[in-house]
Image 1 (cartoon, protein in one colour):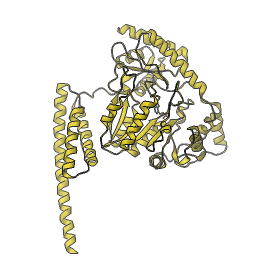
Image 2 (cartoon, rainbow, N blue to C red):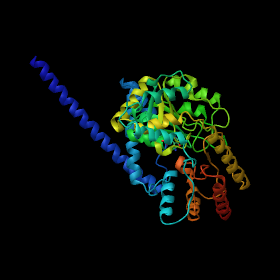
Image 3 (spheres, rainbow, N blue to C red):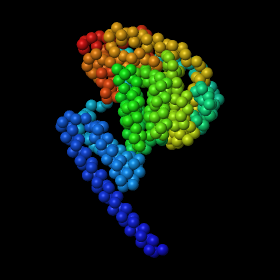
Image 4 (cartoon, rainbow, N blue to C red):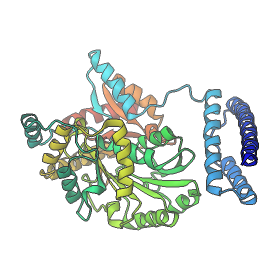
Length: 462
Ligand code: PMP
């Protein structure tokens, strides 16, 4: 008995010693990373170097095999180290002095200008200008009258979950639905509950910035698959396949896409689903623009993949952005993980808002969709006259044209001075400084004024 206790003490001492060695080695690695950061900064070299990362990943994988360590665990550890080194290098380099601008930061600048008395045409945010359905207002009043303002089940009231399941084409039960405060929180709870530090997620750019921000929150790494206007914003699935390694856990899709309006055809979707199946990856499909589709669109639900998660929202469909109601649909296991995040953070979505959303589901949004299509066609016709390159949106509420000259932030500053706000291309990916996003969430007359100002600023720049 005593002997066993002594053995335990010896082993614990050894573990302590090894832990100290690891910490010292990690610190030494950080010091080296800091020095590399200084050199890169002096030479003006990018901090991220995919080739160097891949080399070290291969080395670690073969070492893991040689010493009998799980390659998945080894790569996860490596990713934590790589992420930390990147942070250290960013702090050392001067490349980060400029704060990243997104559609939201431009929106808040525009608001400040308005507060100082300037008139602004808002074409930077995806907030429909039309009214929410009248019966939504009545449902809110009823909620008060009937004292429907209590905590609800974390996943949402049963009636609403049933109605969402029906709207999504049936075949799902209420246990497979979680009602969230906006689609944004459904994205947050999916990414933060399914990914851990050091794991990887693939995002197709240009992309809504929140996916990466959510992954950063838990220390997961975002691998970017860039698409181009030349390829009509279609992702290269071969390249996607090459990006997958044993740390990869999720692929994020967003179709109809914000900011490009792209919708992928069945063939590409099938390839992506197959890749996810082959590698056992979660497939997060953000479909908040699914109603704003002008041709064919197939939800990820149709592919019947057990590890897929659909994100939906009432914000865009019914112009209910401020009600903050969205949802996630997935298998029961995934939904209960997402609901745990929600239970910790917010208990439940406000009951009157859930009842308002339930009332909205009875309304057909096709008038809104038609209106958006007409406006997008109008924006495109104006962009064509300006000879700007763009891909005609197949869905969503935006056009993402290429600038003939100059960069997004310079043009956007100049436009703000002239009272027009649009979103910078770089808000959706570092590679897109030659692009801007124009939102069609305004009446045609307002769009016309805004686009005339854009045309004049672009002409000045030529
Ligand atoms: N996904 C995408 C692609 C979006 O553009 C937005 C809003 N701009 C959301 C999700 C979230 O919308 P909400 O939280 O209002 O439902």
